[in-house]
Amino acid sequence: MTELRNLLHELSDQAMVYDVAQRAKDGGRRRRRRGRMMAGGGAALSIASVVIGLSVWHDAPPRPIPAYPASVSATPTKPAGPTVSCVAGELPQPPGYPRKAFVTGADPSGRFILGRAYPQGAGKRLLLWDGDTVNTVAMSGDDATLEDITTSGVAIGTSYLGDNPVSWTYRNGKTTRLAGDNATARALNESLIIVGVVGDWPVVWRNPSAQPEKLALPPGEWARGWAVAISDDGYIVGSVVAKVASGEGDTVGLLWRPDGTVERLAPPAGYSDTGGVGPTAIRGDWIIGRFMTSGRLVNVRWNRSTGGSVVFPAPVAWTVNALGSTGGVGEPALRLVSGEVIALPSNIDGYQGVNRGGIFQPDGVIAAISDDGHQVVGTLHDETFAGLAVRWSCR
Image 1 (cartoon, rainbow, N blue to C red):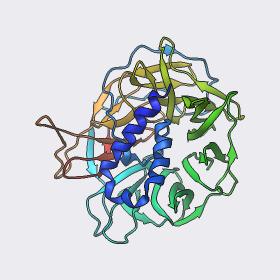
Image 2: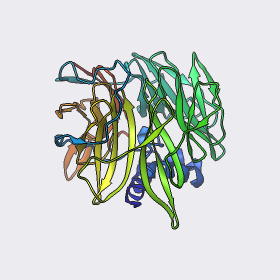
Image 3: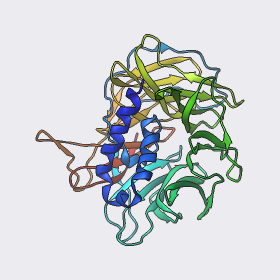
Image 4: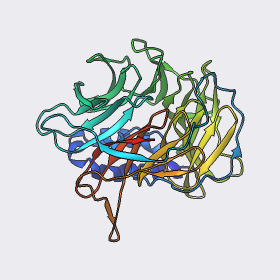
């Protein structure tokens, strides 16, 4: 069934309202390519492009899924304590830059934060915050975005040369192109193993200077696929789209093990009439994703060690940390693994929120959560501000 892809494709089109002026020059072919990846379940657009509401419902009882082997990661799977109080702070901009920026990622410690700004003229658009210090990053090509970064400050990103994406590593002030044509790097781990897509196939770069290797797919006929995230112990998640006589069929979520074997990520037991499964992130034992059931888009968080899963009966959450806390899109909130939801403040100078029936409510995107839960980063937007880059400090 194609419900999941169709819904996400529509949402990716809606997302352009936040970035129309900058992306208009990119041309229809580039937007369609990014929309295709988004529609299939991968968050191929920058974090600024996501406009789906964040669930604030309590977790349903765990439902079993096929057991996965225990992770070899030493990452804890239970939070040390609840996050009870968070303070919002706007991230600084380079001198002369307007108050418009989107956060696109962060390293697991919360020290390094990635973003995209919109300066007047020919100023550099890519931003890298190190604590409270902001630096600009130069990257060849158009429509550049920084996607992911390690605790040592090695980042990856993608830009366009003509209509084709090319990917880069950024280290010590220098960008170096990754091997592969028509390549989009999506994530990397602390060992600098990078995953993404080349053409229409999920790939892995074993190191920044390596050639991309195609990931094995399960038996079947597949039209296209992508890898979206990798854990520090080498587990990779992504999706493929089935090839059928009429064109494209179901979207299937996949988990690749470090030994190269692959298996499907199934919806939790008890859910039928699913129209596709799409994982979006992995950290430690936790995998976050979503599936379509009976016309509804439902979040699911799998645990590789226990084989259990928890559903969020509402739209998409995009990121997960080592404690199992998740964040996503809509009214800014942090969901703890216990199911408790922590509303994040939006008291940024000049920010009012989105007018919904005469009531102003905060709206935005949570891009990343540090492993200890003390740093949350993302973007707020309203009628005045297309994007405000924000860091929430939580204790």
